Image (cartoon, rainbow, N blue to C red; front, side, top):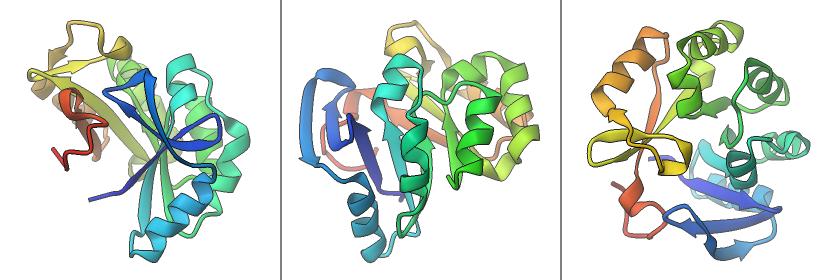
Length: 174
């Protein structure tokens, strides 16, 4: 298991089922939160730039600070282009997490893999009722098995699959 730290406006938060109007705030220092996980033995922490995910513009200014934490950081949220992924990795981010936008565009995902290597890419797949969803979970989606086959065909060996119906409920792993 990989612990997670969600970040919104510089704070450590949790969104209930991805709802930006239902936010629980846990602290003001994401680097300290990552370091807390490292002290508990986590070698890697999954972080999400929620504003970046929502707005499509990642917070590049935070990348070096996050990368300086005591654990390696796997970061997602707004990483949609090859340049985004290359810059995140260059800033010290261990793994770049890209969402369904990269999967829907096979060329983009393959280019990301060529740019930074397959070990530095994780594809986030949000699932409801056996279907991979995109566009803020609003679209009809595609069968998750089909999407996973496409991800593997692009050379990616890691996928982060989230059950949308349980996201942010603190009911344990799914």
